[in-house]
Image 1 (cartoon, rainbow, N blue to C red):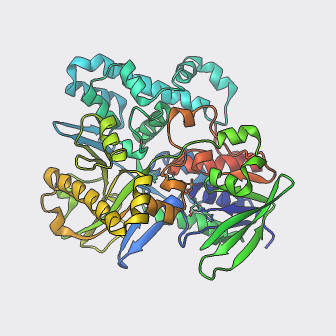
Image 2: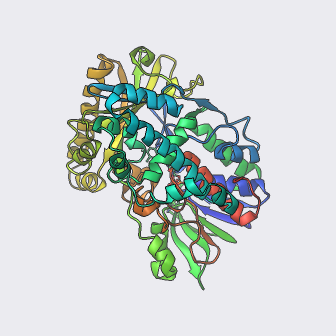
Image 3: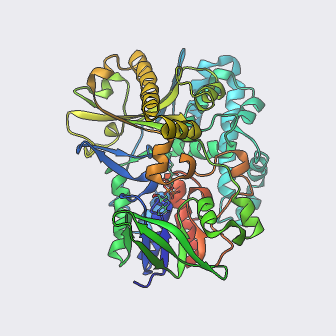
Amino acid sequence: MKTDFLIVGSGLSGLVFGALMANAGKTVRVLEAHEHPGGFGHTFTMAKKYTFNAQLHYVWDCGEGYTVNRVLKKLNLDKEVTFERYDPNGFDRMRMPGYALDIPSDPQELIRRLSDLFPEAAEQIRKFVLEVEKTSEGLKKLSPPIDAGELFNHFGEVFGTVLYLNSTLQDVFDKFKLPQAAQTLLALQWPDFLLPPNQLSFYAWVILFTGYQKGAFYPTQHFEHVIQSLVKIIETNGGEVLLNLEVTQFVFADKTVAGVQAMDLVTHQTHEFTGDTVICNIDPKKAAKMIGIENFSKTVRKKLSYDYSPSNFMAYCAVKDIDLRDYGFGKWNTFYSGHQDLNEAFAQMYERNDFSNPSFAITTPTLLTNERRDCPEDCQIIEFLTVANYDYFKHLKDTDRKAYRRKKEEILDFILDVVERQYIPTLREHLVFKISGSPTTNERFCWCPSGNSYGSSLTPQNMGLGRLNHQSSLKNFYFCNASSGYPGFAPTFWTGAILYQRLSGDRILGS
Ligand SMILES: Cc1cc2nc3c(=O)[nH]c(=O)nc-3n(C[C@H](O)[C@H](O)[C@H](O)COP(=O)(O)OP(=O)(O)OC[C@H]3O[C@@H](n4cnc5c(N)ncnc54)[C@H](O)[C@@H]3O)c2cc1C
């Protein structure tokens, strides 16, 4: 097959780019190492009846006119791929000893709720929330495709936003002198970044926080349907998504990438694939090493020197004969911390591997849509997510498999202890299935170096002006993944769509 676009990896940005190009009449071939498409967004089934999405929980920018909706419209999928909205009165429910805050969509309501909890800090809280709104508007103006007129008309917002280029969330909390407990309640969605406030880019936090305020969503027919719909667009337009094919080498000469060699993981045979343009959806740094880092320009080499995001622990569980709605769960996520200081909670888990007082996220996908495809009628799915250290787990796995398994069980046990104490006293009696993933699980099933969760770490350093984009400095070769765009469902839709826009000239995003 003559291929216009050979895409290495079937992660969301690669699939979105591929679907848009296929829809525009180009021939697209996607090579994927895993047996399922979707990368971090792939779906798997256990014990023949429990279906879990690997890493996606909730998403933003899916409402009318937002990025995901614009892409789906272009693909004629907007009636087919629909979303259910989380509770706007409390989409993220933050809990810690002595405090509870449901994050509402309305910023004024957020100010009111926080001010009720911390009356002495009402003025600082108001100023902080308004600054977040302003920064969010400024970031929109600064995001490509940039409109110079808009920058000029909104100079104040843009200038104020640029001043936070190197700020962490903690820097801004400190600037506004927010009480410690208020900081923790606002930043309790830290598992969405796997960084604590003192390392997390303020920009990254603002984008996600305000994105979810405008609408937090879950796909009506689960994430698997979104992935399958994109694959179908590629296939019905004459393209193909080939699974179990691990790319082992790039075909490179005269500063040009012409194709790849890939190993069929079932037959162990090696095949060569070529394409007029090669799109790299796998980790850019890993691809650059395969090609030879010295072949890239100095500027791109510098951009490729990012550090990886921390990795994570996930527990995928099913409960039977219990309705989680009776225990405070519903169309929202729950975030918990035993510690009042998230920087300390993070250090305890990530640096000292001590999960005895954990901070974690709880999600309940079965409660988010009426489409019951994820488990039998009498069951519900519940998942737990927190940070985990790759080096520690890699060492355990390589040296002592039993200790590796014990550590995973220990983390889940600490989490279940908290959940039984705080929410569902009989949880363990109803648990009919559990399986947990560690950083090495991520590496094995998502092919991500060091088990990284979000590509490059979401620090101010990586989120700044030196961030990698699609340009590779090689001919016919473009990056298209979380580290060369932005991580997350909506941001990877954006990453795939913006590259499509640049290479095709067809404008679907932007004003
Ligand atoms: C724990 C966790 C929770 C998350 N929760 C959310 C959430 O709630 N909401 C949200 O919006 N986002 C969430 N994300 C982020 C989101 O899942 C990712 O940012 C996004 O899916 C990344 O897409 P990508 O295009 O970068 O490709 P990736 O998902 O990184 O896909 C790359 C693909 O390339 C393949 N590949 C790699 N090497 C090779 C090779 N040599 N040959 C062939 N194929 C190869 C991989 O198998 C993979 O399929 C979460 C991520 C994690 C880890």
